Length: 231
Ligand code: IYR
Image (cartoon, rainbow, N blue to C red; front, side, top):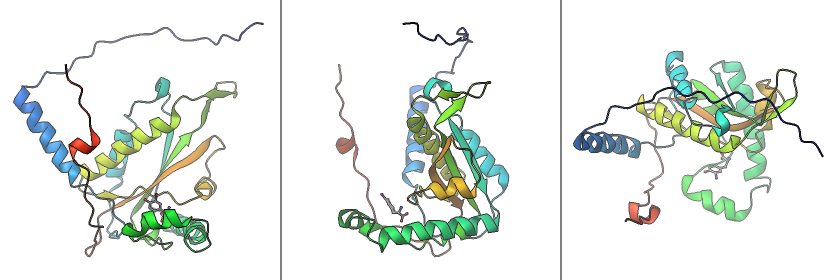
């Protein structure tokens, strides 16, 4: 039996160095970043105030700096500020979510888990937030001849990229939400994405509404999330 061996390019390496920080600087920077990130919250009440496109471009480029399986960068980010497209996304998302919350598609255990967040099928933020950024997973790529090229760890790669996006948005003083209207197929249709792309996450971006509130949540302390096995 013969196996198809695809041509590969030779590895090519370039020097990489980072200036080593003083230990105290490293701790100071780490503390500053940790405490800024600790102030991040998912927000569902957005202001309609506009956000410059440049900030969205910067957040997307930060996301696209993420590591990815075999460096395949299996993502496409669609940024929408067009009110008509936002309205169509809201209508379709609410149609799906109404079936989840009220049409029995969401099991009681799931509804109970969501109760502290106070969510329901209404998604006005999809029209109010100045930007909706939809992260698409490229389930596979393509070779120059059009045949499908396998992607590795695409979902993990997208998860990391979206994490960096969320951090970038927070660092610029804006807010976002990791929204997953379910099922999300309507996003590929409305945004006209090709068949190899699957919606991964919908991230509304903007300033919080003046009267914005968030659930009174706490985060697990270090000793509940980490185990150190020191030598
Ligand atoms: N997608 C639904 C339900 C939902 C699910 C989880 I898990 C959440 O953390 C929040 C909401 C919605 O957007 O309402």
